[in-house]
Image (cartoon, rainbow, N blue to C red; front, side, top):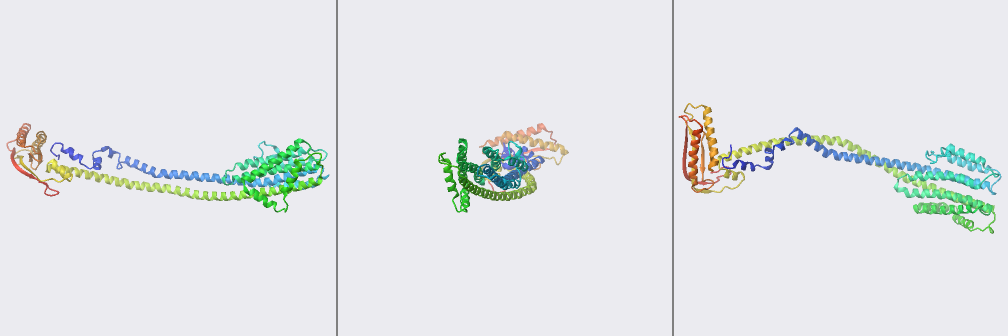
Length: 535
């Protein structure tokens, strides 16, 4: 039943708990809430996104890290293979330099009449070629035939060896022939090693390349210096300039190598100390003589030429050992990096497997958890709706038992003070006789409905209060709880006359049915006797 005073029903609705109100009065919330199938699907999708997306991001990062580590290991392994091959090629370059200089020595006045002593050098060079662990497929950018394979290079050298003759030779062409091969090897070394991206050893790699290039210039210096002492002079100014150029380039490369790696100087000092003599001082002494010679003072000296050649060979052997040891140190450093990369790959693979295994487990757990949450949400929504329904019933009962102002105070846990009303008008209304006459149940219900509808309408019009009773009776009063001086007398009297006239005009009362109204004006004291009752 509704509260029958003014805006009582609206006040009852406004006092409902906001959560309950949102569930009861806002139907749009319930349509898409977690208790509907569409709401469950949306909630499940959101939960899966919140849990699966981070796992997918973690999985993608793991794959990226693992792929990057594998790529780095492959790069490191390729750099290691190139360094190992460069050590082998360094030996080949050394033997090519030795063969070139021995050929020049043979063609000069210092050499014997036969080439028998050259056979040893030829054999050493061929062994260095065939001992290579592999032949680079990209050895020469110009795709020259002699660099297609080991066999092609050996055949190219054999043809040249056969045409060497004391009767028909050109020393410059001899130097150019071997230098072109050596330069091709050095260019490949630069290209292959500089492709490596190992930050830990890049300085050592640069020092290794600089030392290799410097050694090539030192070999040409040995050959030109030997010719100088044999002839007592250079054949041309161009040859003299070439000699000076090779010295300067060697010194520049050697100095740069020492700057990039302190191991160059320490390895060199260790090798030189094995000879018991200072080879560097001896070579620098003869260099000074060559660079400051005058044609009037210098004469051919076969013995000096041989001494120069032997000391320069000793110096080149020393640099070869330094180059070899430096290459082995680079390989050892790469082994450490590769081993670390292998460990990182293992850890990354294990982590990736764990992530892959976790993904279905997390999805399964999330789905189960979401289902439990949805069931609890459904149960909570049902119980909340029951609570709201019960709350509404309580509000209606309170409104029917007492005035709306008093009911609102009780619902909001406010104290109801004891009040004295000097004059209050009370009207008792009821229908009597319907149990004794021939009226049908339908007629009785229609009459009672008309009575109550009319009373409800007049309550609002006359600003009075109404409390329902039983057996078609109810009480109307004025002057309480709102004081209105003596106006309550007029309001109650007019209300009674208007009610009886309106009901008689709208219904056909039989003789056995009578509307009885009793009116009185009394003193009244109101107050709350307990937390549950009001008087």
